[in-house]
Amino acid sequence: MSSLPPSLQVFWAGPVAASRAFESLSGWADIVRAPLPEALHPPRPASHISAAIRRLVEAPQPVHGPDDVAEMLGTLQDRRERAGILLRNSVERILEGLRQPDRTADLLSPLDDWLPEAETGLRSLEDDLQDFRVKLLLAERAGRIPPEGTDWMMDVAGRLHTRLVRTDAQVRAVGELMKGRWNEGTFEEIRRRLSWVLSLREFDRSFDWEALPGFREMPRVTGMTRSDAGMLLLFRFRPDATEREVALYERAASFPLKGRDLAFAVDGVLADAFAREDAEAVLLKEPGRFDVSFQDIVHQYERVRLPRRGLQALLLGLWAAGHCLRVDAADEGREGYEAFFNDFPLLKVAFGLAEPEQAGRLLTLGELGASRRYRDGLKRNESWKRHFQTADGRLALEGLKGARVPFPDFPFELLVENVTDAEERAASRGFGSRWLKPSEDAGDLLSRLENCLSGPVSGVSGLISDWLDVWE
Image (tube, rainbow, N blue to C red; front, side):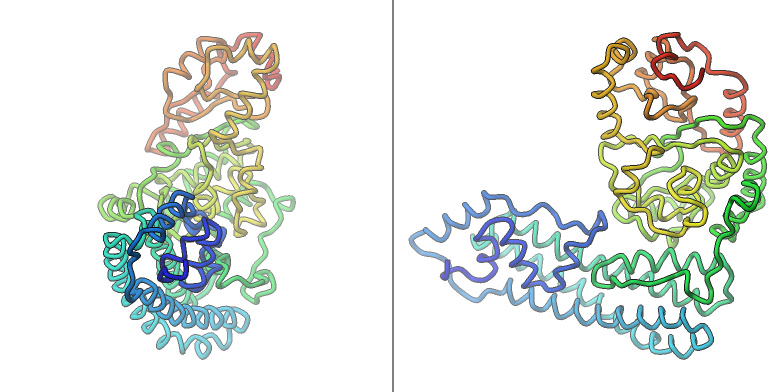
């Protein structure tokens, strides 16, 4: 193995050692292990990569020469470390400015020099990444690195760069917010953006938001009506709410039918999902279609969900009216949904994923998965297997695999989703008319909800009613 250049030795000892070796070469090892979904390191090199390297080592004439790949890794590390130092210093100044608001201007003045330098360094790092790709491809063609190793190393290097670019954007946004006049909405927006930065391991530190002079505790819901609490939340987290949103909220909050169990799909119902570059394009092309601008997206990255116009106010109003709202997500995995809810705190409250007093706190992936208000493909399959083992469950579910039906552990009277043949089949089998197609107009959706809920769920068989044992 000693005949190999360092970039090949990275992959020699197998997947775990490969990761450690790459991290030691590239620096900032903790970034790779950070908990955010988009920051999880890509799949480690498979064992067949080690086998391919072994064949190269045992070849009669191994390749020798300067290891320009390892040299480039050192260059990338230097660029990242310099930009990282500038950003860490900027974050520290911002946090100190939050503690001492009377000194904010003085404390933040160095950012005028640090952030342009960080931006220049990140642009240079982006150029270096292109050079790195070229060197990796040349090394691959020369038989010095397996193709899988090239993809893996480039993926990790790209993610490390992206995290710094995103951090730079949030630090700049927070700096601008701190220069203006503060109100409760400003504070929550600063908290929402900085919470993402402080969740990264290279910036990780304990920080007590509630001890800050600018913190205004959300009045406890027990001390006010839900309608008043919801209105307070709406203006705290959407200080620029339009008259139409306020009207939607008030109409939903005065919903005449109380205490109903309602579920909503996400993609194509509450929000539309896009690749990041497509999300930016559609927001420029159709700015009135969604409740957000591209600059507001903080926690989401590779896959971006944009809430449809008015739905945040509508759902918060339904919560204020005393309804139980649930999320019925379609994907097999739940990664990315926690980032969606962290970008839109009002939805966390509406779906019972956070108490109103804790709306600004980050929702973790584990907390989302553990919530009885949330279901995705993984939880649906678990429920299906568990309940199909009982006699009543088999009678209720036989032939309905794939249908998004209520279960005793995830009940709903009405699910708003893009209805398929499976749900229509379930309705005819005794589950009743409990599915409603979505609408891109929040006002129209509210009208149809009112119409559908004006009476009990129709067409429910006695078998299904007994099995669910919810709406007797």
